[in-house]
Amino acid sequence: MTIDKLLNKEIKRYKTTPDLIVEALRKAILRGEYKAGQNLRQEELADRFGVSRIPVREAMRQLEAEGLITIYPNRGAIVTELSALEAQELYEIRLALETTALRLAIPKITPEELRRAEEILTRTDRETETNNLGELNWEFHAALYLPAGRPRLFGMIHNLHLSVDRYMRFEYTALDYLGKSQIEHRSLLAACGEKEIEKAIALLTQHIEAAGKLLVAYLEQQNLASEGAKA
Image (cartoon, rainbow, N blue to C red; front, side, top):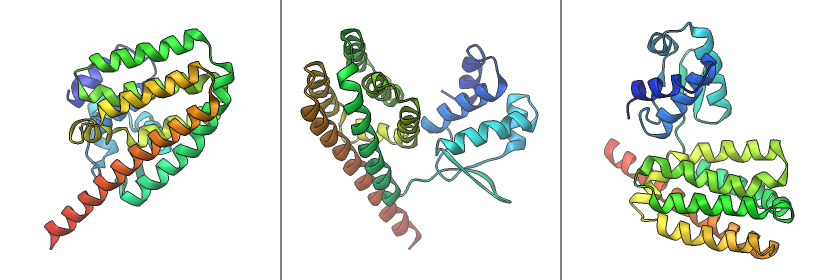
């Protein structure tokens, strides 16, 4: 789906212009419409959205806070390139924050919330569009963390997921990670349902570490390939 089609779709859902621009650009970045390292020019985006530069500037500040772009003086906004070391750090932070959220959430989680998480896994099994798998993965984790009642912690975790979401397609396709991820998700959900906190924390730790190692290895290979091409 092109950025213009995404825009037309989002116009129907959002009322405020900055929100519309944030959502459309976020999806375009996550789906690979805008590549890592690509420059996003305010003037061009303002023309495309049919707005002034002000809402575009506001949207870019939000995307920078989410880690999807970096704004440089005199260079403008660049789609963030994730290095192997940065990916490792992101997953280390994810591990610390998400295990904390889960520990707080499990005592409060309800049967209805557990059913919602199970429904998300069922939808994931049936999903045929790879671009939607990252969002479904986040929905599942979000369903487990929301009962913690820690909105700031939840927001930080969400931003971390957004930072690596665009790379999830590689893990799901090239490495056939989806099946393994779904097995791990169901084991985690079962432990949450049984209120086995330490078991759930151990399962979540293994799940995040495994996904992180895959991404770090992929980015290291990409870096070696890039250096070889320049040689």
